[in-house]
Image (cartoon, rainbow, N blue to C red; front, side, top):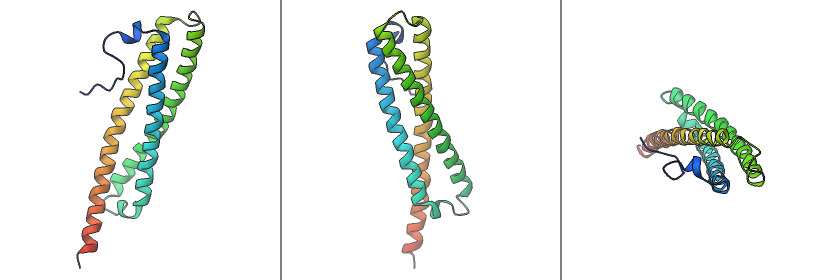
Length: 148
């Protein structure tokens, strides 16, 4: 299985300085913003070709796909919020290293990373499926229009 974690191998989470974890978390936040934009693009793609995509033979497939994209959008928003809070806590830790329990905080950092990796894996699968369905349906429509 593909490893979607973005940190170096080993015990990086448990040995890194707070500044290093802060930089890594900023990357996560930036990536999540990108995925949020990507979800908007997929929604726009579905809206643009809605008439073709919701024909009888595609309706159930599209209904499920749009539901998953909506769920992913909500999950992405939640992860962005958690990442923002995590960044705030990391900033406080940089200023006052004894403010939080280091072990507990590093464990939370690892859980956040795992949640982001799971989200990315799920999103990539749904993005691929969205493009495949759209390509198939648009191809059928083009053939219909080209055939007299």
